[in-house]
Length: 214
Image (cartoon, rainbow, N blue to C red; front, side):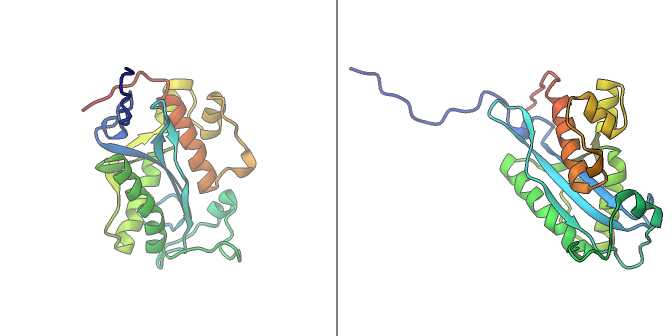
């Protein structure tokens, strides 16, 4: 007689995301702004990529969520910043959202990813991450948003990681050193920079011996 086959789903051979980073979910973020001072310059673009796991337990970028932002009342825009980013505030297809609405547009899928992975909070991953977190925190405070999924001050910074891994700190050079394609004509877009930073973080993190913590 044949032995009955156990058709019950098998548990993965790797630890879930909730045990990778002490219950935090890495979410890669990039912002484009009207200057360098988060307390007075406007948030103009926001993009985020929650990380996921593939079938082998390797970190991979998830879906991208992004919004163009209407400059909040009382914030400033340095024209030199617009020259760098190429943002046209009056572009007919910009379809910008008010600051609070833009935050929620990006935060809602992050909260869904937290639930999916049973993580307690998101931790921001960025290239010069405290810059991005500073603008998010300022926008949250300014708009009165009550459901910010991010840790208020802890980050993972790919400047540090790329400096250790490749001896590079500039995003374009770090990405190139990792063997990832880089198109300079697309740089300084929140979506493009976020997606490339996500690839960079996953590339570096997946080289490191995994420490799965309960």
